[in-house]
Amino acid sequence: MVTIVRAYGSYFESFPKDTVIYILVNPIVMATITFSDLESFRRCPYAYKLDSTDAFPDKVTLEDCLKRSVDDTIREFSKQRIMGNRLKDEKVLEAFWKNWDVNYVKVYNPLKEDPLQYIHIGEKCIRNFVYQSTRFGSVDIVASDMEGTLPLPGGNEISISIQEVGRRGTTAYLTKYVTDTEVSSKEELRDDLGMKASALWAMDNLDAREIVMRWVFLVPSISTELTAYREQCNDAARSLSSIIDEIKASKNPLPRETGQCASCPYQSRCPRFLHELSTRVTGPDKGTELADRYLELEEKKQALRNRIELLDAEQDALRAEIVAFSDSKGYMSLRGTQGKLLIRHERKAELPQDKKGIITRLKETGQYESLSMPNYPRLRSDIVKGIADPEIIRMANIENIDKIYIKKNE
Image (cartoon, rainbow, N blue to C red; front, side, top):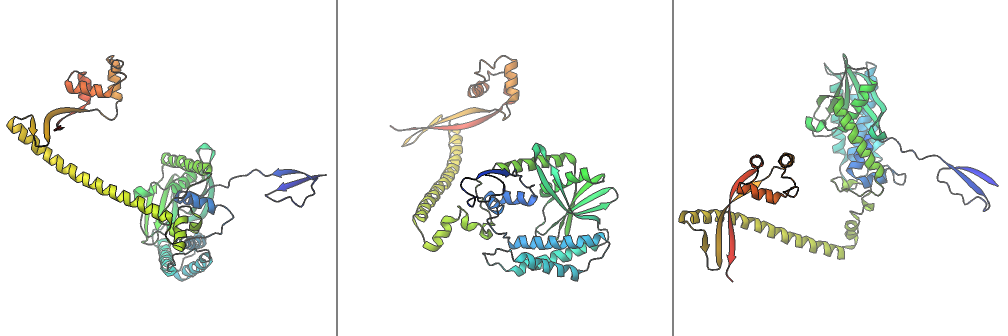
Protein backbone atom coordinates (compact mmCIF):
# COMPACT_ATOMS: atom_id res chain seq x y z
CA MET A 1 0.00 0.00 0.00
CA VAL A 2 1.47 3.36 -1.05
CA THR A 3 0.03 6.68 0.03
CA ILE A 4 1.24 10.02 -1.26
CA VAL A 5 0.66 12.86 1.20
CA ARG A 6 1.30 16.57 0.70
CA ALA A 7 2.54 17.50 4.17
CA TYR A 8 2.34 20.83 5.96
CA GLY A 9 3.44 19.60 9.38
CA SER A 10 0.60 17.08 9.85
CA TYR A 11 0.87 14.01 12.03
CA PHE A 12 0.62 10.54 10.50
CA GLU A 13 -0.26 8.35 13.51
CA SER A 14 -3.65 7.50 11.98
CA PHE A 15 -2.07 5.60 9.06
CA PRO A 16 -1.65 1.79 9.29
CA LYS A 17 1.77 0.61 10.40
CA ASP A 18 2.58 -1.01 7.04
CA THR A 19 1.84 2.18 5.14
CA VAL A 20 4.75 3.63 3.14
CA ILE A 21 4.43 7.38 3.04
CA TYR A 22 6.06 9.54 0.39
CA ILE A 23 6.00 13.15 1.50
CA LEU A 24 5.89 15.90 -1.09
CA VAL A 25 7.03 18.94 0.86
CA ASN A 26 6.71 22.42 -0.56
CA PRO A 27 10.06 24.20 -0.36
CA ILE A 28 10.19 26.67 2.54
CA VAL A 29 10.19 30.13 1.04
CA MET A 30 11.00 33.01 3.37
CA ALA A 31 8.40 35.72 3.01
CA THR A 32 9.69 38.99 1.62
CA ILE A 33 11.00 41.04 4.53
CA THR A 34 9.38 44.38 5.23
CA PHE A 35 10.77 47.46 6.92
CA SER A 36 8.58 46.69 9.91
CA ASP A 37 10.49 43.40 10.19
CA LEU A 38 13.81 45.22 10.04
CA GLU A 39 12.79 47.70 12.74
CA SER A 40 11.58 44.87 14.98
CA PHE A 41 14.79 42.88 14.48
CA ARG A 42 17.06 45.84 15.16
CA ARG A 43 15.06 46.71 18.27
CA CYS A 44 15.27 43.16 19.69
CA PRO A 45 16.24 40.06 17.65
CA TYR A 46 14.83 37.77 20.35
CA ALA A 47 11.38 39.40 20.37
CA TYR A 48 11.41 39.48 16.57
CA LYS A 49 11.89 35.71 16.44
CA LEU A 50 8.99 35.14 18.84
CA ASP A 51 6.82 37.66 17.03
CA SER A 52 7.44 35.98 13.67
CA THR A 53 5.94 32.64 14.79
CA ASP A 54 2.29 31.64 15.04
CA ALA A 55 2.73 30.54 18.64
CA PHE A 56 2.17 34.00 20.09
CA PRO A 57 -0.72 36.42 19.64
CA ASP A 58 -0.44 39.70 17.76
CA LYS A 59 0.21 42.23 20.52
CA VAL A 60 1.06 45.90 20.03
CA THR A 61 2.06 48.78 22.26
CA LEU A 62 0.04 51.97 22.61
CA GLU A 63 2.57 53.70 20.36
CA ASP A 64 2.04 51.00 17.73
CA CYS A 65 -1.72 51.37 18.08
CA LEU A 66 -1.43 55.13 17.54
CA LYS A 67 0.71 54.69 14.42
CA ARG A 68 -1.49 51.96 12.94
CA SER A 69 -4.67 53.93 13.55
CA VAL A 70 -3.27 57.10 11.95
CA ASP A 71 -1.80 55.15 9.01
CA ASP A 72 -5.08 53.29 8.41
CA THR A 73 -6.99 56.57 8.41
CA ILE A 74 -4.54 58.28 6.04
CA ARG A 75 -4.72 55.28 3.70
CA GLU A 76 -8.51 55.53 3.57
CA PHE A 77 -8.65 59.25 2.84
CA SER A 78 -5.67 59.40 0.50
CA LYS A 79 -7.82 57.52 -1.99
CA GLN A 80 -10.48 60.23 -1.68
CA ARG A 81 -7.86 62.93 -2.27
CA ILE A 82 -6.86 61.24 -5.52
CA MET A 83 -10.48 61.55 -6.64
CA GLY A 84 -10.37 65.27 -5.88
CA ASN A 85 -12.58 65.14 -2.77
CA ARG A 86 -11.85 67.75 -0.10
CA LEU A 87 -11.25 66.40 3.40
CA LYS A 88 -13.18 67.52 6.46
CA ASP A 89 -11.89 67.23 10.04
CA GLU A 90 -15.07 65.60 11.38
CA LYS A 91 -15.15 62.78 8.84
CA VAL A 92 -11.44 61.99 9.12
CA LEU A 93 -11.52 62.11 12.94
CA GLU A 94 -14.50 59.78 12.98
CA ALA A 95 -12.55 57.29 10.86
CA PHE A 96 -9.55 57.59 13.21
CA TRP A 97 -11.67 56.76 16.28
CA LYS A 98 -13.09 53.73 14.47
CA ASN A 99 -9.61 52.55 13.49
CA TRP A 100 -8.40 53.12 17.04
CA ASP A 101 -11.13 50.84 18.40
CA VAL A 102 -10.14 48.12 15.93
CA ASN A 103 -6.42 48.30 16.79
CA TYR A 104 -6.85 48.84 20.53
CA VAL A 105 -8.09 45.27 21.14
CA LYS A 106 -4.51 44.11 20.33
CA VAL A 107 -2.83 46.50 22.79
CA TYR A 108 -0.60 45.04 25.49
CA ASN A 109 -0.38 47.60 28.30
CA PRO A 110 1.32 46.13 31.40
CA LEU A 111 2.33 49.60 32.66
CA LYS A 112 -1.33 50.66 32.70
CA GLU A 113 -0.62 53.80 30.67
CA ASP A 114 -3.57 56.09 30.00
CA PRO A 115 -4.64 55.52 26.38
CA LEU A 116 -6.30 58.95 26.28
CA GLN A 117 -2.95 60.72 25.89
CA TYR A 118 -2.26 58.64 22.78
CA ILE A 119 -5.74 59.28 21.43
CA HIS A 120 -5.21 63.03 21.83
CA ILE A 121 -1.88 62.78 19.97
CA GLY A 122 -3.65 60.83 17.23
CA GLU A 123 -6.40 63.46 16.95
CA LYS A 124 -3.74 66.16 16.59
CA CYS A 125 -2.01 64.08 13.89
CA ILE A 126 -5.28 63.74 11.98
CA ARG A 127 -6.12 67.45 12.14
CA ASN A 128 -2.63 68.33 10.91
CA PHE A 129 -2.93 65.71 8.16
CA VAL A 130 -6.08 67.40 6.92
CA TYR A 131 -4.39 70.80 7.09
CA GLN A 132 -1.25 69.59 5.28
CA SER A 133 -3.39 67.95 2.58
CA THR A 134 -5.71 70.89 1.89
CA ARG A 135 -3.48 73.93 2.34
CA PHE A 136 -2.48 76.00 -0.68
CA GLY A 137 0.64 74.70 -2.41
CA SER A 138 0.33 71.14 -1.11
CA VAL A 139 1.68 68.32 -3.29
CA ASP A 140 -0.83 66.91 -5.80
CA ILE A 141 -1.30 63.27 -4.80
CA VAL A 142 -1.44 60.81 -7.70
CA ALA A 143 -1.10 57.46 -5.89
CA SER A 144 -1.40 56.04 -2.39
CA ASP A 145 -0.48 52.85 -0.55
CA MET A 146 1.88 51.86 -3.38
CA GLU A 147 3.64 48.52 -2.89
CA GLY A 148 6.44 46.73 -4.68
CA THR A 149 9.48 44.53 -4.24
CA LEU A 150 13.01 45.88 -4.50
CA PRO A 151 15.82 43.46 -5.48
CA LEU A 152 18.90 43.95 -3.32
CA PRO A 153 22.58 43.07 -3.81
CA GLY A 154 23.41 39.51 -2.83
CA GLY A 155 20.12 38.06 -4.05
CA ASN A 156 17.97 39.50 -1.26
CA GLU A 157 14.83 41.56 -1.70
CA ILE A 158 12.64 43.78 0.45
CA SER A 159 9.00 44.78 0.34
CA ILE A 160 8.43 48.44 -0.50
CA SER A 161 5.44 50.39 0.79
CA ILE A 162 4.98 54.08 -0.09
CA GLN A 163 2.17 55.89 1.70
CA GLU A 164 1.70 58.56 -0.94
CA VAL A 165 3.18 59.60 -4.26
CA GLY A 166 2.76 63.22 -5.27
CA ARG A 167 3.85 65.09 -8.36
CA ARG A 168 4.90 68.57 -9.37
CA GLY A 169 5.91 68.72 -13.01
CA THR A 170 8.48 65.99 -13.63
CA THR A 171 9.33 65.54 -9.92
CA ALA A 172 7.79 62.72 -7.88
CA TYR A 173 7.39 63.15 -4.11
CA LEU A 174 7.39 60.09 -1.85
CA THR A 175 5.59 60.99 1.37
CA LYS A 176 6.02 59.29 4.74
CA TYR A 177 3.77 60.38 7.62
CA VAL A 178 5.43 60.30 11.04
CA THR A 179 3.56 60.21 14.37
CA ASP A 180 6.64 60.81 16.55
CA THR A 181 6.40 63.86 18.77
CA GLU A 182 10.00 64.90 18.00
CA VAL A 183 11.22 66.11 14.60
CA SER A 184 14.25 64.29 13.18
CA SER A 185 17.13 66.36 11.81
CA LYS A 186 18.09 66.24 8.13
CA GLU A 187 21.22 64.30 9.09
CA GLU A 188 19.07 61.64 10.78
CA LEU A 189 16.64 61.53 7.85
CA ARG A 190 19.51 60.93 5.43
CA ASP A 191 20.01 57.61 7.25
CA ASP A 192 16.39 56.50 6.66
CA LEU A 193 17.08 53.25 4.81
CA GLY A 194 13.39 52.68 4.16
CA MET A 195 12.89 55.93 2.30
CA LYS A 196 16.09 55.48 0.31
CA ALA A 197 15.03 51.99 -0.75
CA SER A 198 11.60 53.30 -1.71
CA ALA A 199 13.27 56.07 -3.72
CA LEU A 200 15.49 53.53 -5.49
CA TRP A 201 12.42 51.50 -6.42
CA ALA A 202 10.65 54.66 -7.62
CA MET A 203 13.60 55.62 -9.85
CA ASP A 204 13.11 52.39 -11.80
CA ASN A 205 9.31 52.20 -11.72
CA LEU A 206 7.95 55.75 -11.82
CA ASP A 207 8.10 58.10 -14.78
CA ALA A 208 9.90 60.99 -13.09
CA ARG A 209 13.12 62.90 -13.70
CA GLU A 210 13.68 63.55 -10.00
CA ILE A 211 12.64 61.76 -6.81
CA VAL A 212 12.14 63.75 -3.60
CA MET A 213 11.78 62.05 -0.23
CA ARG A 214 9.27 63.84 1.98
CA TRP A 215 8.65 63.32 5.70
CA VAL A 216 5.57 64.89 7.30
CA PHE A 217 5.83 65.10 11.09
CA LEU A 218 2.17 65.26 12.02
CA VAL A 219 2.37 66.30 15.68
CA PRO A 220 4.21 69.61 15.05
CA SER A 221 2.86 69.76 11.45
CA ILE A 222 6.31 70.15 9.88
CA SER A 223 7.55 68.60 6.64
CA THR A 224 11.11 67.98 5.46
CA GLU A 225 12.21 67.22 1.90
CA LEU A 226 15.44 65.71 0.58
CA THR A 227 16.35 64.89 -3.01
CA ALA A 228 17.18 61.21 -3.58
CA TYR A 229 20.41 60.35 -5.40
CA ARG A 230 20.96 56.91 -6.91
CA GLU A 231 24.47 56.41 -5.50
CA GLN A 232 23.28 57.05 -1.93
CA CYS A 233 20.25 54.84 -2.47
CA ASN A 234 22.47 52.04 -3.77
CA ASP A 235 24.54 52.32 -0.57
CA ALA A 236 21.32 51.97 1.43
CA ALA A 237 20.37 48.88 -0.59
CA ARG A 238 23.70 47.25 0.28
CA SER A 239 23.18 48.04 3.98
CA LEU A 240 19.69 46.56 3.88
CA SER A 241 20.98 43.39 2.25
CA SER A 242 23.55 43.01 5.04
CA ILE A 243 20.83 43.33 7.68
CA ILE A 244 18.69 40.74 5.91
CA ASP A 245 21.69 38.39 5.78
CA GLU A 246 22.05 38.89 9.53
CA ILE A 247 18.37 38.04 10.04
CA LYS A 248 18.67 34.88 7.95
CA ALA A 249 21.81 33.79 9.80
CA SER A 250 20.31 34.47 13.23
CA LYS A 251 19.39 31.00 14.53
CA ASN A 252 19.36 31.69 18.27
CA PRO A 253 19.15 35.49 18.57
CA LEU A 254 19.92 37.14 21.87
CA PRO A 255 17.59 39.67 23.49
CA ARG A 256 18.50 43.34 23.41
CA GLU A 257 17.43 45.46 26.38
CA THR A 258 15.84 48.81 25.47
CA GLY A 259 13.43 51.30 26.96
CA GLN A 260 10.54 49.38 25.36
CA CYS A 261 11.16 46.15 27.30
CA ALA A 262 8.65 47.08 30.00
CA SER A 263 5.80 47.01 27.47
CA CYS A 264 7.03 43.93 25.59
CA PRO A 265 4.53 41.02 25.59
CA TYR A 266 7.44 38.55 25.67
CA GLN A 267 9.12 39.89 28.81
CA SER A 268 7.98 36.88 30.88
CA ARG A 269 9.84 34.60 28.44
CA CYS A 270 12.95 36.77 28.09
CA PRO A 271 16.11 35.40 29.77
CA ARG A 272 17.15 38.97 30.58
CA PHE A 273 14.16 39.33 32.90
CA LEU A 274 13.43 35.80 34.20
CA HIS A 275 15.37 36.25 37.44
CA GLU A 276 14.01 39.74 38.03
CA LEU A 277 10.43 38.59 37.56
CA SER A 278 10.90 35.53 39.79
CA THR A 279 12.30 37.60 42.68
CA ARG A 280 9.26 39.87 42.53
CA VAL A 281 7.27 36.83 43.68
CA THR A 282 9.76 34.93 45.87
CA GLY A 283 11.83 37.86 47.14
CA PRO A 284 15.68 38.14 47.08
CA ASP A 285 17.61 34.90 46.55
CA LYS A 286 21.20 33.75 46.07
CA GLY A 287 21.29 35.38 42.63
CA THR A 288 20.33 38.70 44.23
CA GLU A 289 23.13 38.28 46.81
CA LEU A 290 25.73 37.50 44.14
CA ALA A 291 24.69 40.48 42.02
CA ASP A 292 24.82 42.83 45.00
CA ARG A 293 28.30 41.64 46.02
CA TYR A 294 29.61 42.12 42.48
CA LEU A 295 28.06 45.58 42.14
CA GLU A 296 29.52 46.59 45.52
CA LEU A 297 33.02 45.57 44.43
CA GLU A 298 32.60 47.46 41.16
CA GLU A 299 31.53 50.56 43.08
CA LYS A 300 34.64 50.32 45.29
CA LYS A 301 36.87 49.92 42.21
CA GLN A 302 35.32 52.97 40.60
CA ALA A 303 35.89 54.97 43.77
CA LEU A 304 39.57 53.96 43.69
CA ARG A 305 39.83 54.91 39.99
CA ASN A 306 38.35 58.32 40.77
CA ARG A 307 40.80 58.74 43.66
CA ILE A 308 43.74 57.77 41.41
CA GLU A 309 42.67 60.36 38.83
CA LEU A 310 42.72 63.06 41.51
CA LEU A 311 46.15 61.90 42.75
CA ASP A 312 47.50 61.87 39.18
CA ALA A 313 46.34 65.45 38.67
CA GLU A 314 47.94 66.49 41.97
CA GLN A 315 51.17 64.69 41.05
CA ASP A 316 51.30 66.36 37.61
CA ALA A 317 51.09 69.79 39.24
CA LEU A 318 53.81 68.82 41.73
CA ARG A 319 56.01 67.47 38.91
CA ALA A 320 55.95 70.87 37.20
CA GLU A 321 56.90 72.57 40.46
CA ILE A 322 59.77 70.08 41.07
CA VAL A 323 61.18 70.58 37.56
CA ALA A 324 60.99 74.37 37.85
CA PHE A 325 62.75 74.35 41.26
CA SER A 326 65.47 71.92 40.13
CA ASP A 327 66.19 73.84 36.92
CA SER A 328 66.43 77.13 38.80
CA LYS A 329 69.06 75.62 41.16
CA GLY A 330 70.87 73.50 38.59
CA TYR A 331 69.88 70.31 40.40
CA MET A 332 69.48 66.98 38.58
CA SER A 333 67.98 65.27 41.63
CA LEU A 334 66.25 66.05 44.89
CA ARG A 335 66.84 64.11 48.10
CA GLY A 336 63.88 63.43 50.34
CA THR A 337 63.72 61.63 53.70
CA GLN A 338 62.18 58.52 52.05
CA GLY A 339 64.13 58.46 48.80
CA LYS A 340 65.51 60.39 45.87
CA LEU A 341 63.97 61.97 42.76
CA LEU A 342 65.93 61.98 39.49
CA ILE A 343 64.86 64.77 37.10
CA ARG A 344 65.38 64.18 33.39
CA HIS A 345 64.57 66.28 30.31
CA GLU A 346 63.86 63.86 27.48
CA ARG A 347 62.58 63.93 23.93
CA LYS A 348 59.74 61.77 22.67
CA ALA A 349 58.99 60.95 19.03
CA GLU A 350 55.39 60.20 17.98
CA LEU A 351 54.90 58.53 14.62
CA PRO A 352 51.83 59.27 12.46
CA GLN A 353 48.92 56.83 12.79
CA ASP A 354 49.05 56.06 9.08
CA LYS A 355 52.55 54.65 8.59
CA LYS A 356 52.34 54.00 4.84
CA GLY A 357 54.62 56.98 4.10
CA ILE A 358 57.23 55.81 6.62
CA ILE A 359 57.22 52.24 5.27
CA THR A 360 57.53 53.49 1.69
CA ARG A 361 60.47 55.72 2.62
CA LEU A 362 62.25 52.90 4.52
CA LYS A 363 61.93 50.61 1.52
CA GLU A 364 63.16 53.32 -0.88
CA THR A 365 66.28 53.91 1.22
CA GLY A 366 66.94 50.21 1.91
CA GLN A 367 66.40 50.54 5.68
CA TYR A 368 63.30 48.37 5.89
CA GLU A 369 65.15 45.08 6.44
CA SER A 370 67.79 46.56 8.77
CA LEU A 371 65.05 47.92 11.02
CA SER A 372 63.42 44.47 11.36
CA MET A 373 60.57 45.39 8.98
CA PRO A 374 60.32 47.83 10.94
CA ASN A 375 61.09 47.99 14.66
CA TYR A 376 59.14 51.14 15.65
CA PRO A 377 60.63 51.56 19.17
CA ARG A 378 64.12 51.51 17.64
CA LEU A 379 62.99 53.90 14.90
CA ARG A 380 61.63 56.32 17.53
CA SER A 381 64.92 56.10 19.41
CA ASP A 382 66.89 56.88 16.24
CA ILE A 383 64.63 59.85 15.52
CA VAL A 384 65.17 61.28 19.02
CA LYS A 385 68.94 60.79 18.69
CA GLY A 386 68.87 62.54 15.31
CA ILE A 387 70.47 59.62 13.45
CA ALA A 388 67.36 58.58 11.52
CA ASP A 389 66.70 59.50 7.90
CA PRO A 390 65.91 63.28 7.79
CA GLU A 391 62.79 62.58 5.70
CA ILE A 392 61.54 60.16 8.39
CA ILE A 393 62.31 62.70 11.12
CA ARG A 394 60.13 65.26 9.33
CA MET A 395 57.22 62.79 9.43
CA ALA A 396 57.45 62.43 13.22
CA ASN A 397 56.19 64.75 15.95
CA ILE A 398 58.99 65.33 18.48
CA GLU A 399 58.13 66.63 21.94
CA ASN A 400 60.24 67.67 24.93
CA ILE A 401 58.99 66.00 28.11
CA ASP A 402 60.03 66.18 31.76
CA LYS A 403 60.39 62.86 33.56
CA ILE A 404 60.88 62.10 37.24
CA TYR A 405 62.32 58.74 38.30
CA ILE A 406 61.98 57.54 41.87
CA LYS A 407 64.77 55.83 43.78
CA LYS A 408 63.54 54.80 47.20
CA ASN A 409 65.78 54.28 50.24
CA GLU A 410 66.82 50.68 50.75
